[in-house]
Length: 310
Image (cartoon, rainbow, N blue to C red):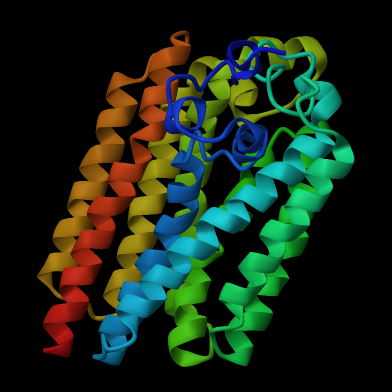
């Protein structure tokens, strides 16, 4: 198989395709290093909670290291999760135009090779997790159950995005677990807000595959909401902003955090206005733009933490 034919259909011209060694490319594609947006979206709630917790504690001395460790952990654990997802979905992926070129359905790697690679990534993630306190370690390990069941949800429920939200928002709990050795109401409300955000942006993402999903019987909120997607996004994005705002108020944040939340809310509103569910390329661009929405909120929380620690 030529490298050109081995490329993933919805991710071409990236550094994996052009710079990575040939032998490593299928594994980097399994981890989605050719499409790192998911890692960034997994990371954002981690960084939000780390900054918010540091601000509440009036102590940013450990925040830089926590930010770096969360970065490494998010990328390797998202890679492990995607590898698991591809192992469980390899037969379904072979039937969808956008995913049939992935490493497993296209035969670039075997199931055994993919499983071994998943274990390696999980071990790296464990090494990162062990840098934290015992409560944080146990909290991080607890997320694995949700990660394990997620790939099967789209076969049995119209709401797999909720389960994805439970997994991708887990970092909203981790910052408090790392900083305080506990999870309080503020963390839980931040977690709920992040879940609502995930449901919204993954609904946009799922519209890319709505037609193929209908043919093979895969369920999603994109298919469930259909023409009413804009109204659903108003609900879930609005709920995300309100819940995150409640968490910020509970954490007694100052004006930079509120400015970050306002920018986050404006970004989400612009996505709803611009969305055309019949345009897959636009859906992908709007989905990816959530990295910037999350970064705006993080910037506000980080500035708030530094201001309160001064």
